[in-house]
Image (cartoon, rainbow, N blue to C red; front, top):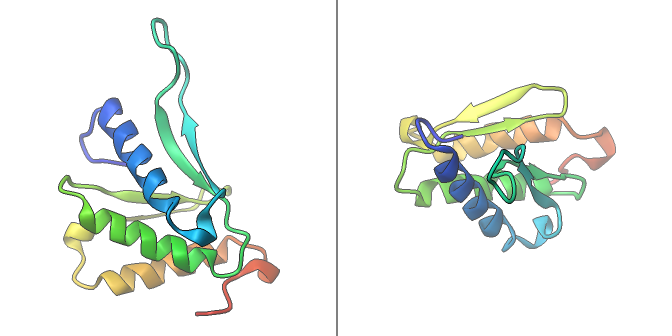
Length: 124
């Protein structure tokens, strides 16, 4: 989610994040852009979200660190919102964070809590 961003800017940032995550070996093949509805005059819906499957051991840690690093590289004001299938969410904006490592830990904890016990990251 990008505060005050247009749908086109949001789509651009989501596409950028998806490309960034493809460089992470543990996340390769586990990400997909979720597109919105197609409206009249459009050839396809714009990306509205990025879905990530976290079943590999350590994937939550890799995702948390990669997303925080991606946000730190942005020049625009970016707010990231992670949502579990249950609807529970975790949101952060690194502009207002003194300790990015604490965000990584909190995000990893949030992501781990949404996984089945057998799939949780044992490296933490």
